[in-house]
Image 1 (tube, one colour):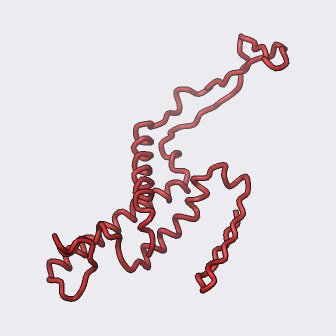
Image 2 (cartoon, one colour):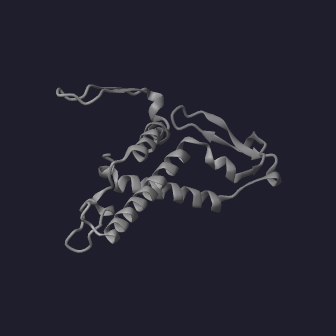
Image 3 (cartoon, helix red, strand yellow):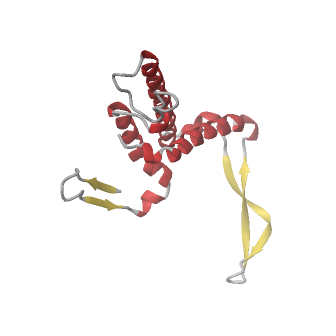
Length: 175
């Protein structure tokens, strides 16, 4: 993948994107390599928060930014909105980090020894009509490895939470 997105100018932006076949094989991970650094940079330089996090003035002042005339309690409310937005960004960032690393290996213990063995049954190929041999995978070390599927499922659910937040606030990733 090659991406070149130029700076904003009066004439618009020059954008060039080239996608290779290998980029879409594990497309979620490919995009995570782009989205993660962008989210980290957004968190570092942000100048505001989405309007739903900026409920600083109470009723009649919803979706306003923090101005000098707000009382101390309004500033506290705005600061709480900033804190909540940063928590959402942190969940998104964590999820995209997980898509880049090989996290599922931490849920596998021991080592498996896998081999192929000829099966007793044969298989009639529907295209050629020939009878062919079947093979099956054999675990030669079944008692010396296992996977924590409950832990892996919880981890994947946490990843999905961050991805859902990314989708929910996608249009709020503006600054």
